[in-house]
Image (tube, rainbow, N blue to C red; front, side, top):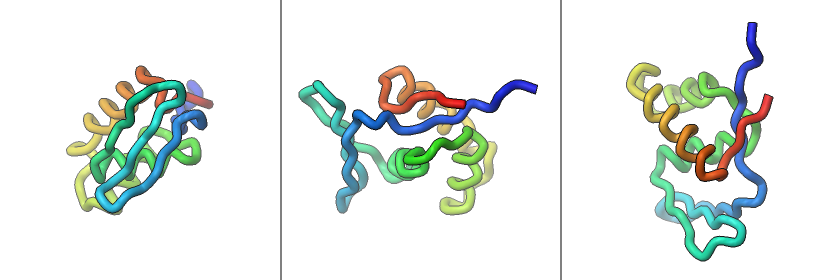
Length: 91
């Protein structure tokens, strides 16, 4: 059996919760990124390492949505944010 991939925030990315969601400021970049509620929730979960399934289960509990409905969104988030180096894979 393979090792499960875990994901975690990149510690060089500054983040702050605001009244409208989350703001991320990347190190050495001149722009910031605003996250909607769902992306902000995932970002907050990733303060500590978490697997894709753990993220999905936490979203299900808060948003009362089935795993099938959110599985693709979580996968898309993880792929995009890893590519942008905002989060990283760990084991």
